Image (cartoon, rainbow, N blue to C red; front, side):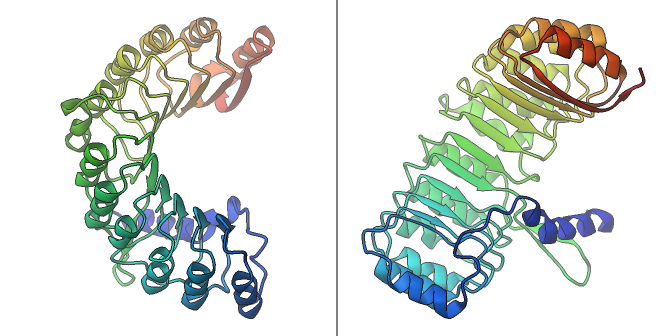
Length: 345
């Protein structure tokens, strides 16, 4: 990985959360105030939002576990001060937990205990946790049979001297989840994972219950084939796609319930759009960023053949003019069209 990409990733680490910040009402409490608040919570409390609480520490997590043993939903998003020890002291006391958000909790390590302590887990967010390993995912897959949703994107570590990124997680993590979690419906992957070999697990076994698949790593035609053959119930697909019309044909042939599709940098052509409209007639949302191989004839036909389409984003396609999109908007007033960096009028 080149150093410019690493610098971009590090800046994203620092500033991306600020763009979507939705802070907990407890965020501004001092450490003493937060401790007092947690200690006074009723024992039947099932949900707590501690996101962005920089005053939190391991002691407060331990007290939270003692005070609220029936917790089911815990949001620790961007609680950077917490450690593995503090998280363990909470989870060992809250075995009924169903939802855990650890987004951007940097520095957590050896998290196999999450699966062991939280067998009722249904939803977990681990994205931007830089210490996640295959063993952590394997423990979750082995112990959390009711898991429905998992996020683990951008879980890389970096060497501060060489600025080189590296991962402790591989495509094997996908196999653990698909084979171990029959209720899994939403899967958000790291960008280094969606290789054809890693996604082969979808086509090798029985059909999955997966409804949403997201990975901003590049995905090939072969990888799309494996994914779609094992996911007939797929309703949403988000990719940093490098697949062509061949990959689109696999989507059209296998994913007839698809409602939302996001493609980035795909060489999809008029033919691909036509296949997609025929095979995925329930499509409601399409996002086409830097997909510049189709023209206005193909786009107009595509929109005309999708009666349920209500949102379309299109950008960086010089074959289609702003004027064409304005005419489409007038023709289909119930369709929201957003566009940028298109061909001239």
